Length: 451
Image (cartoon, rainbow, N blue to C red; front, side, top):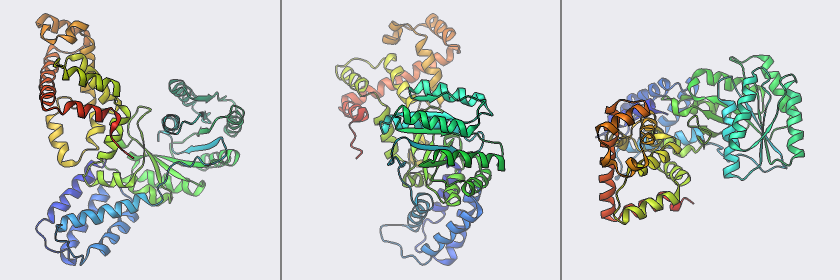
């Protein structure tokens, strides 16, 4: 997310190198570039105008601290303005009410409401220890009801079996009664969407909201929708008493304009952002961290949280002990590490949180670049026998052909995996000799102090 915006703003900063002072004269061109960068990122025009005017008022005539360059000062001002733009009023989900707390999701069709409902249920179960009931009122798309039911089974959370022959408002009332009867902490209601905003949809979602009196009414918006997201935000904001926004599909959006626009248009904070298709790919929205990502500073804190939350501590300690005893890092170990990366959303999700100056180096150096590449390498390793995984040197030409056939790839892919494995084995050996691997594994195993 924000790739194009980050690239443009970094260019703006570079253009200020060597300037001793930010003046009206040299700031005009810079702000024009900032304006163009935001417009290209699909940020709404009124938001761009207010943002640029605010920066201008703060930077013109600004005295540069001796320890900073004009570019660095501008970055600080832009960073502060981005936080103000996206972060005013950012808060945790409001769960301080008599159970069941009702969370209503509204938005256009295809915005990701159903998957967001499941992701939110998992987040509440894991992070807040809540008993959650999922319910769908989308009677126009029976597949949506089935999808939500299967996701609920997968996550081991409650699901209210919606009857497509009943009115949506009736289903919402029945789901609320079931949540009360079965002592659920939270009821998440998924509503129907349309391809475009229409009065019939708005009337229906208003009726559902009146029937269940939600504590949180969240507007779910596709980050790739661009100006359509802004128009939908206005319509839903006028029809419902929105309390927050869920920004979806941020992993597939290189522009990020919706994140900068929706907050101001709805007047409500972004509470969560969806970062992938998997049910764990949901993050609470932190304006400071997102602002840092936009400016290419990375989001190392979120990266550390991902690692400590997803990495198997026991497995990490076991690998550390194994290497400490002088045993080789084998393909079974590589398989486990690849799975850990997949749990964290793949290489792309990790790279997105690294500072821009490191991404190029890490991307060029990584032998595991790309989600598809990781999946392919896991498949190749799974096509090997346990002995081949433990003793990779036994893999000769005939074995390579068998492994390639078993995993559906060319022999060259098997050779590539083995070459990458040897590189990683050398890295592991050098870290073990330096005494740093055990500390690294223990840290990634969940001992990093985050609070």
